Length: 329
Image (cartoon, rainbow, N blue to C red; front, side):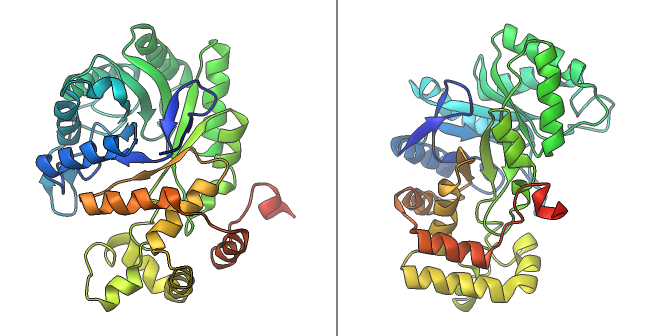
C-alpha cells in the first residue's frame, strides 16, 4: 500500500481510505470487523466514519451512531487505535430539538464528546465538518474547534462538501486566529462527476488541503453496471442515483465499459486507478459492503493507466476544467 502526506501536514496516510458508512446499516458487525481487519492487514491506515452513520434511509433500518460504535469496539482490540488515522464528522441532525445539529459551538462540543464515547477513544485524528453551516460565523466555529485541539480531543480539522469559496473563508478566518485551519476537504469527485475541478480542487490545492474523494464509482455507475445488468444483478448498481444517471448516460457508460474490456481491467478498478493519478487527490474513499468488494478496491492500487488510456477517459468523461477559464473564455 502506498502512502502520502495529508495536505500540508506531517500526517502520513494510505492512498485508499476505508469508508465505513455501510457498517451497521447494511453490513453486520462481524463482517464489518473482518473488513477492517483485512484493510489494516493490507496497509490501509486511514478510516473514515461519521456520527450519523448507521441508519439505512432506504430501508429505514439501523440507528445513527451505530457505525461509530462498531468501529469503536473494533479499535478497542489491542494495538488497533495507534495504527489507525481515525476520521469522523460533525453536523448531522440528531433530533427535532434546537441545537441538535449544525456547527454551533454548542453542538460541536456535544457531538465531539458523543463521538469520542462511541468510538471508545480519547482523540479524533481528523474531525470533519460534514457540511457548511451558513448560519454560524467562522469565528464561532474556529473558537470551538481550537478548544477541542487545545484539549487534545481533536488533532486536525477538515471539511466535507464545501464549495471553493467556503474553503477560502474558512482558511482566512483561521489565519486571523493563527490557527492551522482546515487540512483536508472530502468531496464528491470521480470520472463521471468532475465539477470539483472548477473551484474546490484549486482552492484545496492553494490552501494546502488534502483531498479525500467520496463515491469513486458514482453509486455503482462506474463499477460495471451494464455488465451486471446483463447478468441479472440489479443490486444497488441499478438503483438510486446510478439508475437515474444510467438512463441519461447509457451510451457513455457503454463506451467506458468497452474500453475497460479492451484493457482487461474491471471498470471499478479503472475508476479508482484514475483517481489515484489525479495530483490533487490524497486518497479516494472505498466503502465496501463485503470483503470481496474491499479486495476488488485493493487491486486498483496496482493498476497503471497509460497516457493514451488517460486521454481516452478524458474524452469519454470530459472535465469542465478550473474556473474562470472553464466558463469565462
